[in-house]
Image (tube, rainbow, N blue to C red):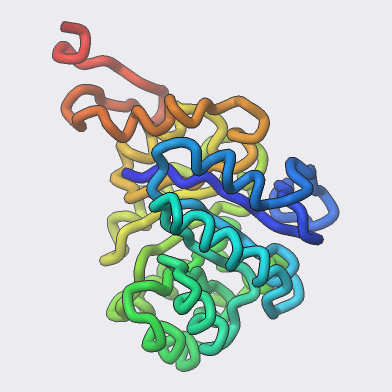
Length: 262
C-alpha cells in the first residue's frame, strides 16, 4: 500500500478544507511548493495535488504552480497525481505532458461519460476516477452539487476503461480526522476492477492500518499530517510490515499476532 500526502491549493496557497466547504479553510503554507518539498523529504512514492480553485470554477486556475511542483517532484523521483478542474482532453494532455503520473477526473465522469472515455484515451492508464461521495451519492463541481449518479453505478459504467486508480473520498469525513468510511471502502474495493485509494477522514496511524486491512491500494493523508496527528514516518512504516505480521480489527484497532510479539 502507498501513503500519499496531500497538497491542496486555493488562492495560490496550501490549505485544507473542512468537509470540502470552500469558506472553511486553514492555510498551512503560503507557497504550495514548500509543502510539497516538506513531504518529499520522506521516502514517499507519490504526492496528491489538488487545484481547489479549479474544482470550484471548472477550469485549471493553479496549473503553473502545479507544473512547477510536478517538475520538483520528478527531480526527486516522486510521482505526482493531480486533480481539480480537469474537464477536457487538453487539460489531461497538458498535465500528462508535464509529467503527472495520475490525472484525477470526477465531474466529467459523471456528467459526460463519452467525454470521459475520450479523456482516458488521451492518457491510457494515467487517468484516475475521482469518486467523491456523500454516502452512495456522487458529488460534482467541487463537491458542491449532487451528480445524480450512485457510486456503484458509476463504478459499473467505468469498469472496462483503462484507468489508473479509483480515488474514493467520503466528503462528510474529509478534513475531520474522524476516520475512514471503512464499510463503504471495503465494498468499493470488492466491486472495483481497478486499485482503490482511500481518502477522507484519516486521523491516525490506526486509519492507515485499517485502509491496508481493507485491501486499499493507497491512502491519502492531508490535515492530520499538517496538524501533527500523524507522523509520516510511522505511516510509511506500516506499509513495510509484512501483511502476516499484524491483523486489524476494523471495528477496533491494531492487534498483534503471535509472530509480531515474538
